[in-house]
Amino acid sequence: MNDSFTVANDRRRNTIGLSQAADLRALKKAIWALIIVVCVSAACQIYFFYDAISVFNGIIQKQQVVSASEQMEELYLQGKFDALAEKANLRITSHPYDDFGYFYLGLTYYQQEEWLAAQGNLNKAVSLDPGWSDRVSPYLEEINANIENGE
Image (tube, rainbow, N blue to C red; front, side, top):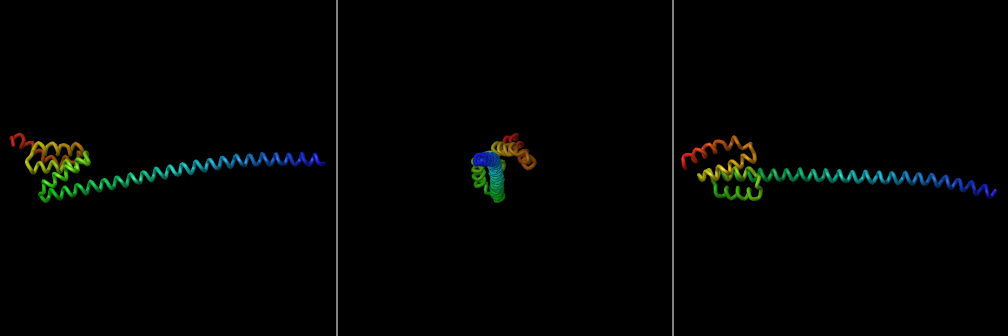
């Protein structure tokens, strides 16, 4: 009877052992699945956080451009062409693809009757943003007429 009891206990232990091993494998799979879900979730959060920062930076840069263009417009309207030229040159130096800087520098040269410099800067503004064409064309027509007349 002792032997049959031992055999029965051994079978029970083996059955429990196999069941526990299966449960352990399932638990490991579940843990790995959870780790993957957490990692993917963290990656998505990082991506969306980075995207939000990029959008925020874009808004700030656009506001800086608007602010700089408003300042240059104000200087132009006040007739402060030396200060405008300085501001426009600083803007172009720090932001070489800023069409506003070239536009206002071109207007400054236009007011100072420096036709070639005005023409070059106004054309550069249009090349950076074709939206300037309508606003720039009257100036360029007058500049071209003055250059043709030898002024």
